[in-house]
Length: 217
Image 1 (cartoon, rainbow, N blue to C red):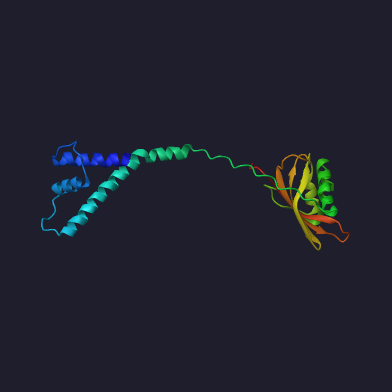
Image 2: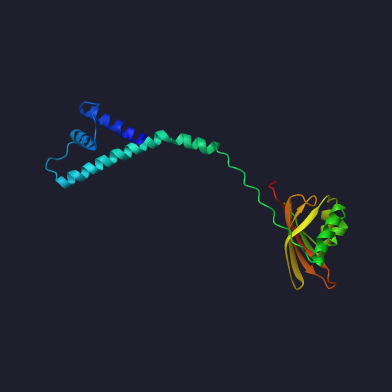
């Protein structure tokens, strides 16, 4: 509606500028006639050419009016202000992946890890790793080798509950993907991957332990 109001105002201005009486009904033919008075065409122009010019004139008026209406209804300043003040909604919390049951030999790895971490036993934690194992903690350089892993874990530990969401084994290699929380039944606060290798004694040892939190620091 506002766009047509702007068209009417533009045509009224043209009427006043041409010396005609304002207030009477205005049509597109009036606009063409007014513009041709203000800017007369050659009288010998071809009729088809005059028709084409008339269409161009009316199209130009409509485009100008449309631009004015758009600027009035939705000025750039308001659009910028709205974009600057818009607050994005926080992403919806994703449901936790369901836990899976591990074979006894793999479940032992998680159970021993929980026990050593809760008791802050760095030597027991390091003993769960292969001699050339890695710890790949979030925000820290890699730690390699049992001795370095023991040093890395000195003084660390506390409440911990591990659960698996996926696992696989092939020959002497395997992996566990899971989540961790402070206590069983609580929502996960992070996730981990354990790459495993089975030794000659049949015991699965950790080749790499990578973990990170579920929230940004």
